Amino acid sequence: MRLVPDMTAKETLELLKSHLRKKGFGDIEVNMTGGYDPTETPADSRLVQAMVTTYRKSGIEPLVWPRLAGSWPGNTFTGAPLKLAAGIFGLGHGAGAHAPDEYWLVESANPKVAGMDGSARSFVDLFYALA
Amino acid sequence: MKSNGADSPPLSGDAVTRRDFVQSAMVGATAIALGDRRVAFLSLDDRDAVVAQITAQHDATVKMLQDWIALPSIAAENKNYPQGPEYMAKLARDAGFQHVEVVPTAGKSGVFATLDAGARTSLAIYFMYDVKQYDPAEWSSPPLEARIVDRAGVGKVMVGRGTTNSKGPEMACLAALHAFKAARVKLPVNLVLVCEGEEEIGSPNFRQVVFKPEVEAALRKCAGIIIPLGSQSLDGAVEVNLGAKGVIEAELVSSGEKWGRGPKLDIHSSLAAQVDSPAWHLVQALHTLVKADGHTPAVEGFFDKVRPLTPAQRKILEDAIPKKNEAATKKALASSTGSRTSRGTTRWSVWRRSRRSTSRGSWAATRGQAERRSCRTRPSRRSTCASCPT
Image (cartoon, rainbow over all chains, first blue to last red; front, side, top):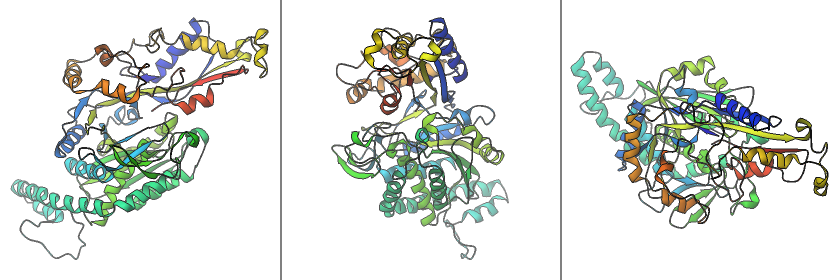
């Protein structure tokens, strides 16, 4: 199950168990093996601004979007007590995560899409943008 | 900044070193303003030297990634631990991190590393060194061989488990560090690296890595943290996401023992005529979790805690929606008969599903392999259904 603010992993797990009990499936075991709360970072944070600057330097106007539909444990950093900004960053392209024939682009046929070296370059530029 | 040795000759004019700048900055605000301009000028030269090095080391970078792909750490199968974290630590050391340590947890070890460049700003980087399971029979190219394959209209791609999720982008980040090192250019930021080996099972022990006192102390100095990802779609577009969804990975188990019905042992399917089936009991339970459309959550109270959109978020959505191409995504990923009707409301849905829709329907059809491994269809005494994160 995927969660958005202010849903929490703990409360949502309880909702699932309670739902199953009410529907007559209280015997079904629910074993949570992992999970965490949603990640949020302010648009005006220094990190996000540096990311946007870096993409623009490469001639790309990034599309700002509230959140990735997937998950990573960024909440460990954005939540208390650290409250850090957290960003998903990098030029480059790949596909097929969790599926057969997963790939990562090494040499791009499209000049608008970065290959391995262009992806590495984006990190160089982010470091300078943030310095 | 070139990391000139202490015996470097003093430079003059625009060719001022950061050390010179720091010294001059101490004398007053005027010097700071001047110094900043000079540093910016120098950074451009340095940046070009680093970028040239990235190109020069391309083959070595590809080889490093291939070598890493050959060592898949899979937490769900307890595969390649402790080799995975040890290899991760070596990669960090090779990239120039001065302090590198494997951090044990109650589960799989993490890795913590720091690179002090003497810079004013510190940035943290998150890596996962684990990957998802794979079935080589389903691959057109062996998943651990990381072959370079021509993909029409895309380019030369490396095919292998973990190439995009997430060793490829992580190696691109490491390649940048190798390039700084080889070009003898000082990094403009200090780095703090935190890695885990259980991302694909929902990071159950990651807090033990992050909140180890010295790790937490290092993170507190950082301006933020990034997770490397190849963010471009095939038209070159990039999204900047202001967050990510949380997740619950859970396994639902239906058993004869807990149910009080059904078989005590696995039995022949013909005996369903006499003995109840925990598998069908599980199916009935799963059926209650989503509405008839097959995707809207039906768990009571599921949306109660969802925070309404702020005006700022609404503006972000209104600006972005006309630029997004949901139809192209559907065309690329969904079967022609199986995709959902495109409606504006899906954009606003608070529970948007990111997961891959497999042709084999099942609850939380996130990852085909995990489902097939754990959803038993024969009338056994226990039936399980797993959902998996990320």
